[in-house]
Length: 198
Image (cartoon, rainbow, N blue to C red):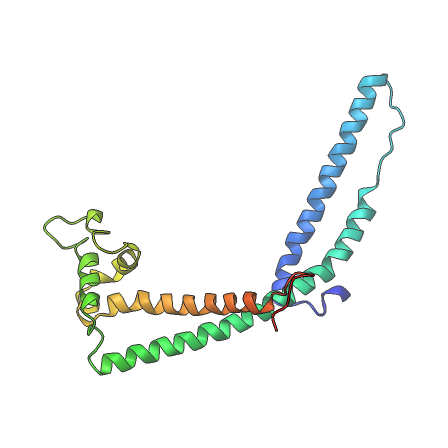
């Protein structure tokens, strides 16, 4: 229990999986030893001396080494998720504030193509020839597929929320991945021996 003191909740959640992996390796090791014994009996007719490794000590040592590694991994994930959660929260607040502002101004459907996008998604349900063949005629269909759960509702369709919600979610996801990309770019170091720009 002493090794679990500094571990985060996510790290503790991963600990049973790690123990299960150690137990599985011990089981495979025992089966290998049993296979060696069976091969020895088949070859010599009697039980010959076979070098058998005791898996218990090795498994315990592996688990002892795995716990600090698991703790470090849990701390890294918790730290990274914490920052990404803040980025997602800030992007969500910005997205909702923008929606509220433009709805109050009556500009949710001000861009002409916004109505066209919602009409393409709506034609999947309500047209002379409804069906998925309505998608992908002019624009790529992902945006319209994301609108499908909402666009059939007349209220959400007329006030523009059926087209706004997928865009708001996409904005938040894009902000989180731009943060991750920035972290990868600025955390990288040039390889040894490469020229440095001054």
